[in-house]
Image 1 (cartoon, one colour):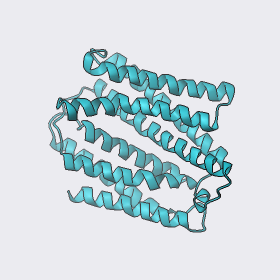
Image 2 (cartoon, one colour):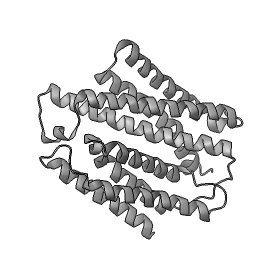
Image 3 (cartoon, one colour):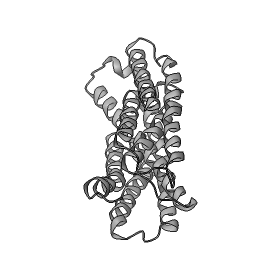
Length: 263
């Protein structure tokens, strides 16, 4: 419990330092938030490792465990991207979310996991990396929408200084989507190759929704390259694809594990 509380507290300290830095005159804000963030991410990862070592089978990847791992991935990506400039503003949302998901996982408890071979483990870890990366892309899309909306209304609030120029934010959005799309492609390929009975009743909705999300993300990337799609169109396509992906994995897991009570 101690490691969980320390990690959550460090996430909140990072958030407070970010808010204070973003409210100041310096842009980008000071990097005082980075050290507690790195410590929180390491403790977060260490907690999952400790649970995996104490539990029979492989790492716990049930509903709350998977959510916590996605939060961990988002926090780590935010630390890497934010350390380079003004994208640290992402941490104001990501770090409290990571803390809440870690606490929810610990509070719910751990479920014994089935022993996964390296094939299924590869598929599962690729899926979590894809969800984390594309979740960051969804947050970037929301930031892009807020920035465009504020500029269109000439509503020049102080928080705009915390964001990078519109073109830079849009470029980062599509780079993040590209990486996430590649990871999602590998996730689907390993699913086809390594998962038995991929279209059985328990997996069919997850498979169909994941493929639909992959198609939407792919169409967006093609539209960007061939037709120069940007702005609100890019935001709408990104959020639609992400909604499908969340329903595919966490929607189905919520129903199966928490509503129906099946592992």
